[in-house]
Image 1 (cartoon, rainbow, N blue to C red):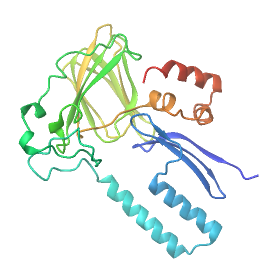
Image 2: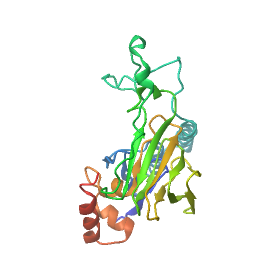
Image 3: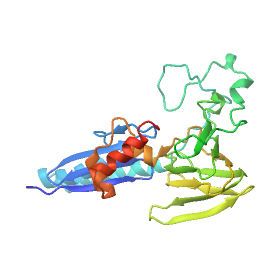
Length: 282
């Protein structure tokens, strides 16, 4: 029987993935999108190309010249992707046409003759969110391109986060943006974890700021007995958010239990208990 190698769910830090590699050449992988939808049979292009190139070399004895060409092309694609960011504007305005049925990377432009000041303004962050009755005791109000269409192609957005006493914005990532938070009420314990599993954290107070690097897992916790609130700024019109608890335990369809039990070294009952508590909290 061929041994099976397993890799636990992790972030790249731009996606969460899980895959099993059988040395004979079968590859089953999965990833979860920032809206919590898993793709258990999806392929991560650079990973699958590289692995299959090596597997095929063993199984089919392809020439090293061919393998080298595939890996060189893969490496070039990876380098190109690392420099990618929100697309730059090629005209003064490209207000998002959210009603358009055309699917592009971003949004199509609204008819310039129909653009007005309301496309560039909003009072969505003026009122505090009600955090007390939420699962984690925090609530995020986004001011991104989906709420302010004038942000399309401008590469910026904001969010307001309100925290009840003891509230937590649970570990999460923004796969498309760096985040900087400004505390305008209360205090927070904040931190992020590097890809070397080093925690960088401190307590920040009213009037202070803290930066979370792009794609890294981070959190904010209000350990005080008073509410807290921050304004978050992003260098993306739509930074995306992957909440680690919801991504892993409340995805639709669900992440397989055998992946989670192996990853967290617990039994199926513990996994099902967590899933049941988070199932209605998405």
